[in-house]
Image (cartoon, rainbow, N blue to C red; front, side, top):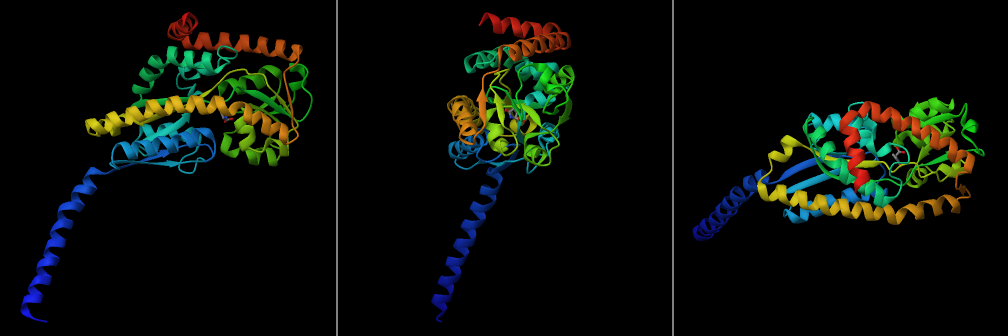
Length: 332
Ligand code: PCA
């Protein structure tokens, strides 16, 4: 090799190295990676929506903010997600907010029976309750990004339920305070189990009845053990996606704005997806030979009475703040 060539080569190498030195530290510092634990399967509409949200954020920030969604309770179990985000173990998370009703009754406003049972009503209730929910979560170091509903809640069983008395003695799967209280009122045994463990609980016979949406019934292949679905439309629970406030504050302004914009889009898309798929899920139960039935008048009457009791319990716990939210909702 001639000296000229060698020096040219060295020069080129120096150039490459210089460019890398310029690019790499800059790129590393500008890129933020977040984990977002979630508790439901990858093809559940909530997770589909979260994935789309993460993609929107990455696109809008030119890859500066990368959010990895961990579905199926793979990073944290459902009841642990909120604390994980509060303590910064994860930067964001999605949570069925009513499982934290024991922290604060306002987190259970969307599971007050028969208060908001259609999607338009449920959206109104979210609008009426959002400021207070945001305030209470902010006090815990969490900033709300968006909320998305499940399907209306019905009852899965392996026998006819013509009246609430038929629920006596059932091994009843609960997922929050309200569903456990229903068991207590009808004389069933409550077992609290989150959705990720429901298929196993069904397979092993730990439970023989439960209340949830068409989608969670579908996700758990309810038809393998259950025969009936009573479409009681008792309430529409919601998942809330939030972010650790300190992690949010650490983002630069344009990234914060992109994140909030994508969150607003995700909220709208999530409500649409939920509503579009609600009937599809019930069709899948039917296609798998389940009886999908409206509740009989006697069952309905019994559930309404239980609902009144739960509403009274909730109003007592939630106090004037809760009452004000309900009033605001009723005026909308
Ligand atoms: N699915 C979740 C919450 C409500 C729903 O429809 C579950 O059953 O755990």
